[in-house]
Length: 118
Image 1 (cartoon, rainbow, N blue to C red):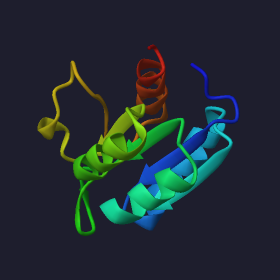
Image 2 (tube, rainbow, N blue to C red; image 1 turned 180 degrees about the vertical axis):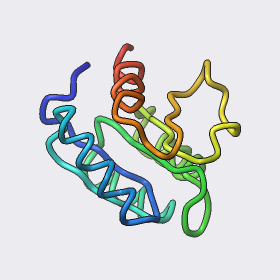
Image 3 (cartoon, one colour; image 1 turned 60 degrees about the vertical axis):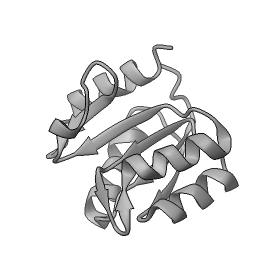
C-alpha cells in the first residue's frame, strides 16, 4: 500500500464518523485530509487537491457518495475509492472496496490494501 503521506478525501456527512476515519487513516500512514458532506463539495475539494484515496458514504447530504465519485471521476479521472457505509448491500463486493459501519480498523486496513493493489 502506498499510503505514506497520501491525501484522502473523506465524503461523509456525519462529523464524528469523518473524524474517526481521519484518525484511523492517519494510523495507516495517510498525511492530509479534506472532508466533504455533499457531492458538489466533494467535487470542489477533489479539484483543489487530487486525492490519493477517497472514502465515501453511500448516503450523504444532497445525494450519494456514488454520485460524488462519478462526478470526480468525470472531472479528474478514476480515483481509488473505499465505500464506508451502513448500506453495504448497495455494492458489488467484487467491484468495490467496501467497509461496513461501525468501522473496524482491520477492515479499513484491508480495504486500503485492496484499493492500492492496482
